[in-house]
Figure 1 (cartoon, rainbow, N blue to C red):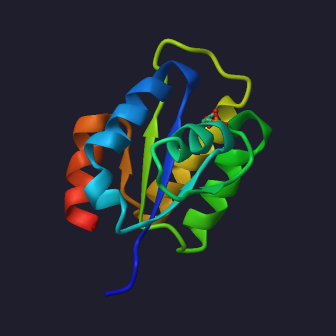
Figure 2 (cartoon, rainbow, N blue to C red; figure 1 turned 120 degrees about the vertical axis):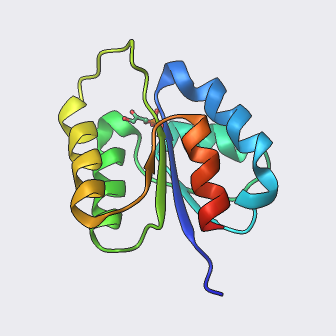
Figure 3 (tube, rainbow, N blue to C red; figure 1 turned 30 degrees about the vertical axis):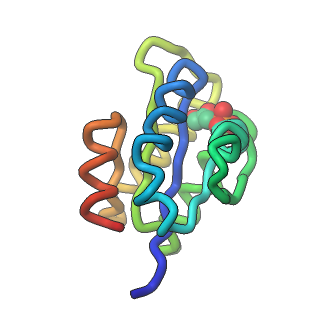
Length: 122
Ligand SMILES: O=C(CO)COP(=O)(O)O
């Protein structure tokens, strides 16, 4: 079976939750190729997993991941947004979610859905 590609993204207020999610699901995630926005990816690397780092979200990382999704190069996106925060790159965030809907790419925005997606994808 071909290796699946999972994108992982978390806003600052959600990075601890993302690291916890990755640790809880490390056995599944080890089977995948991982790609992440820059700062999220740096945290995930600390768990020992190999992850390709894109630019930081506010510097275009969300847009890079959206482009990969549009090209059919991503099997699922796990994106823990901070519902309490305001973001200068909000248009990029909306664009990423829109691209997921255009191309029917599974998108989880919380750990409960993220776990279901990992179990169904990996
Ligand atoms: O801003 C982000 C998603 O919108 C995440 O970017 P970082 O992982 O670089 O913090």
